[in-house]
Amino acid sequence: MWIESFSILDYKNEEANHYKFSEGINLISSENNSLGKSSVLKSLYFNLGFDIKHFPSNWDSRNMVFQLKCVINDEEYVITRKNNIFKIDNDDTPLNVKEYSNWLQDKLNINMQLPNVRTNELYEAYSSAIILPFYIDQDDSWNGALYKNVTDTVKQYSSMPSEIFKYLFNISDIEIQDLNNLIKSYQKEKNDTQTKINSLNLVIEDYQTEVSSVPSIDKNALEQEINSYLKILNDHNEKATKYKMNLINKQELLDQQKQDLSEIEKLLQMNKKRYDSIQSICTYCNSYLTQEQSLTRLNLSNNKFEMGASIILCK
Image 1 (cartoon, one colour):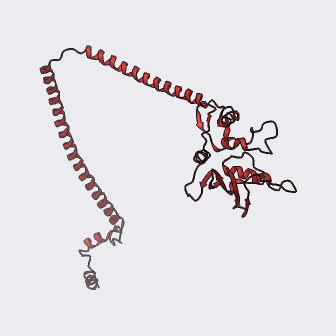
Image 2 (cartoon, helix red, strand yellow):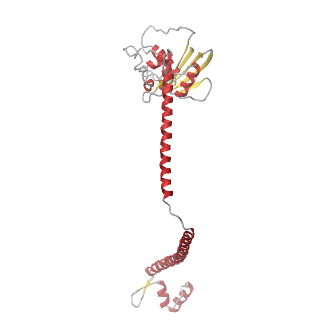
Image 3 (cartoon, helix red, strand yellow):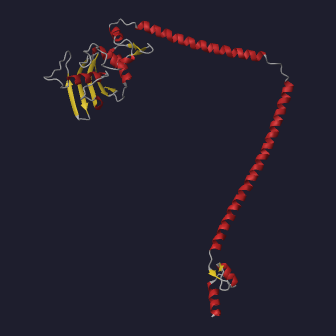
């Protein structure tokens, strides 16, 4: 693999840079320190799939998009990375880290598998493990632990980084580990099958015991007993139906009584309202009279013309 060009877009600060490289050795230099050489190199590795543990303090990769053009086995590819999402060439289908790692292994014609730190089972290596032998961090690689603090991704594998170099130098015992994993898989399958067999044997034993203890059956007596139970069941069903119909009738009567009660309460309320609305005072006994009581006493109907005529006669 060799890299033709590399671009960095900082969309938060609205800045961008583009770098071109030639096939072979390329030298990145500057007259002073802290001008961004390490940031560019770390970003380049990050774009390839290496999870950088420590970027420079003024370099926030979360706000950046990285894109490089590279050649792998005479084929040209464009790799774009934003955080943990990758895109290859012009394909709009996004890839997560595992999917990209599988793509990278396929293009590099390798099949690196590493033992898991907890189960010791082999799993396909992530891109950080594939790139790790070719990465040196000037901030974290010169303190006696070359690869200890450069990335957290490889902590999921045991015996790092020796297992990676064993694979690279073709001295890995991967075939032995594959066989051991296969033996574990077969052993687990065997244990599961044996457990099922034991469970079935217990069921068969219980069944045989129950069958052997079953007495002879009088079919006629059994039929009479079943018919007797069916008759009892039918009688109960008939009684239940009668009780249900009686309950429905009672419910209808109750609903009617509730409706009558509601109408009586309304009439009582109206009557109370009429009783409370006193219209006049009796001139003889000074008692309060409603409008109807006054009309009754004067032998009048509630008619304006009749009342007027009565007034004229009184005058």
